[in-house]
Figure (cartoon, one colour):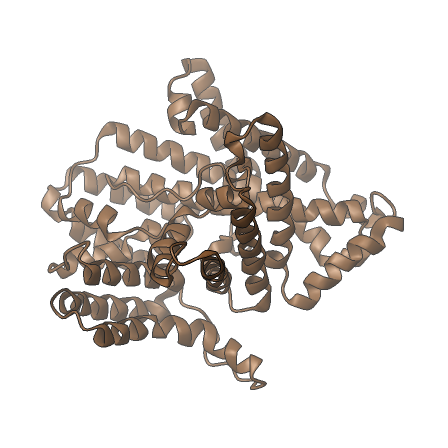
Length: 464
């Protein structure tokens, strides 16, 4: 059940009403039941994976707190990751070995996200950073909290469990801020991302007919599309949580204003980057073990990050491109351009924007062959018509207008938020009533009148 569906919005309105009026002692029971119901609507056939992982990590967390055996804990982690491996990677690895065999035909909804959240909890317990949760309802809600379950953010036990163990009444300010974030996310997803996606899909479906300019532009537009899609999801997820009196981890901080690839990964999918830094990069030795080893560690992290997104060579290459540039920046001392004058800051931003968006080609491509052919078509397309006739005949002018409007809005919002060091909801709340309500009306009317809904408009990250 998508956040932007009318059925979800109706059920959420009822849920938030009950959370507001029922005694606080029933809040966790209600939210846990809502999480199971939400997951069942989206993927009932795989609900048992979530339940079994929840039960297994609940009991092994208690064991890991008392028994510090490295061998036993390694076994616990292997078992915890085994559903993710079996469903997502086994068929791919068999294919690389020349064995054409599909183990499972569908991937459980959100398995990459709730597996990483459970593993992070176990590691924190083993390290003594958090205490093992004894209340299975609290732990079950930690893992199945419905705003996060489809595509994160990956919340740490340190952030989420204390809020679950000490539930509180939702304040009016929290509810108001949550609704604003949900409206902002809805605008990004069903209006901005959907409008842009129409144009991007048209070009990617027929690259051999398209000019170099349009082929390159489509890759850069895909960068906006995936940003709107994933950031839109995150805004809606965090907005839902805020309406229920729970704060979730931040996932985006104006990533396209980054002045280096290092800076980009401090701003993009922050919860995943934090997870890899805490639970993979540092245990490998981080940057404390010499320049060469630190570079290898960074490449390992981004190779794993790429594969985490999808079992395909395209995702591996995408991850390694980012990893290689991160290593080069570290070796060349080129990762902190924002503190080195306006000229270096500008060229740092330009280089970052080009590299990040060029890498998105591999993320978007269905396979390596398509990615390579697409890149070659950019060179071949120089002699083609600047604006292909098929593009003119098949693209509604309003889609292009909406895409241009969405890009302009995003640039303005991101720059303004960065300058004010505040989020959009807080900035708009401080404006005069006329400006404030004009913005609210635009955020609601454009998605309602021109947004795209249904199965063709699912979240990109929900498949990971």
